[in-house]
Image (tube, one colour):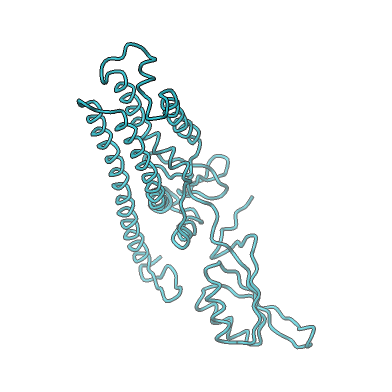
Length: 340
């Protein structure tokens, strides 16, 4: 492909290969920057939890310290955990876009036959047009617990028991420690039981969410196999190519538009020029009026419907448009036709 040959012409864009690559590089840098911002926010929240824990433990073991300081800090750390869970979901949204470009755009440039997976751009466009969190709250909560917060809660628990055993003087028995754990009208065994139950619930969340793998990950890439597609464009021995494991294989919703019009030539020419979509014309007859009409068929995606309606409305206000979902559209401009 020569440098003067455009990659595509669509809605006023004329991009040469160099222009497209430059745009992708700038977009990649922007997503890296945004992911870094949210990564720093994650670290900031963790720092808040660590600093507050250290400060509260120091107060608890100072002369006149009370166990209530540690329990109060446990509530504060839980608030930080909730905040960090939300921030981690935002971080993973930007991170997943970065990983998608790394595995399906840049990596494809390095490995023969230098062919990216045909659906990666659609997956990236879907994320831009309809942003949504890649992971659930439970997965994000479990990941932050396993990474940082279980250790913080464990330290708080040990500090709580140590405070009860040492203040106001050294306890002589386990029963005395339990009695000291009381808070007002709440007996000590209920306070300790509630603490153990809370930590056990967090531990179960951390363990049970280990099997959730929707997050794009921060260090190690993982890959799964999907028929006929792959970020590196290479087939496996079984004839299946590798896909980035976190990439959603679904594309933007594909539709089939049927247009009944008496100005088929004008309408079809404008659809081809502005939407860059192919148009097929079929003869039709209105059974009520007995008149002949042209029937145009156009395959398109959900984001192009409004543009199509505007084109038809501008050229033939009396036209009739039917838009229905398509199970699958294969061919140029859509999914590649893959042999089974």
